[in-house]
Amino acid sequence: MNILLDFLPFMYDGRTRGIGGVASFAKSFYDEIIRQKDTTTRLFALYDSSFSVGKQYDYQQYARENDIRLLDISSTPISTHIEQQHINVLFIAVGQFYVPYDLNGITCKTIMFIHDIADVERADNRVDLLLWDKTADKGVRWLKQFANIFLGRWNRQNHHIYSHIIPLYAAKNTFAFTVSEYSRSTLKYYFPKLKKDIQICYSPAKSPIMDDSIENETLRHLIDSGKPYLLMLAANRPYKNIYTVSKVFKRLATEYPDLHLLTLKYGHVINDHHIDIPFLSDSDLEHAYKHALALIFGSFFEGFGYPPLEAMRHRTPTIASNVTSIPEILGDAGIYFSPFYPADLYRAIKQLIENPHCCQSKMEKRLAEITLRQKQDMQNVIDLLFER
Image (cartoon, rainbow, N blue to C red):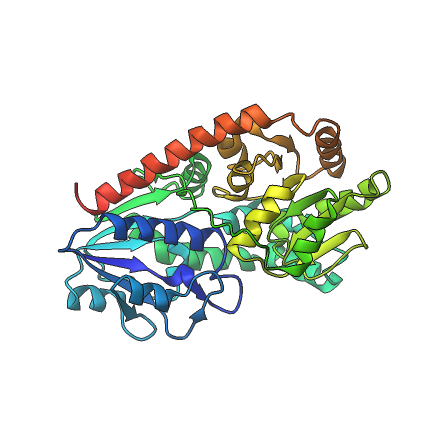
């Protein structure tokens, strides 16, 4: 059997690709495929030579270590590679990454994921008009967002994206997957012509890597100080809601002078109790979770959302947005707030400060439930891939 994997999630495209949840999602699947394959299975992987290696995983080293042959799609159509290498199954981890490529002529069995359609939702609900961060953004950015919405640029862009990938997602030879009930509902809502069954596979659990030592000096100093801190990831992405978090933190700092805010990749600091770190290794991130007072997960959009589960592994509570897939995944193990109301986040954080152990038993139960579901879902996909 010849299997063709998708290495585009491992590649840096000059913007945000090559790090984060989708890279971890793909790696978890490929590790398990490699573990379960037999000696007659040959692995290939699509990559684009015009992109560089992402920060999280070195796809070239991974391919060498696991005898995976790389196929460049920067100039050769995917269908040509499939025909030349006699591919039996194509696995696409992130469908939207394939917009620039020719998807015609793909007739082999295909397993394809679309994790979320946040770009479609944000154009519809116009939430970007609320996301002007005075610390990081200039007014011109907000004006551009206003123009993109009201002049229909985002709608036209989305039409181009999804008119290109949905035909393959809907094809008879494709098994269409997404990562939550919420994402399935949004796909059905915005694409009513998508009549086929969309199956749900919760994003597979990431294998934690945690060394004894902490590599990042700033993080090590913060943890050694023993001062309580709130943790927020991917703060450079506006939909993660850094504006509301930073606004509320400024207010909390007047009541709790020892409280700190640790953000990743924001690129700015709002006061002397705010620490921003551009990048943490997988091991250091585990330490950041372990010692945090709480994870702040205030997103406006999430298809699945790894961070609350990663925090729960260390018995660290999550103060979470109450929209999209987040309540589905976190269940009753989180402290929820509306991402549109700063005072509600203020309430949620104070609730945790006053009762820091309020979610402990619920976290343990929910983590066990989700971990079991993740294992079962991933195995179902792998059984489908190997035709078991």
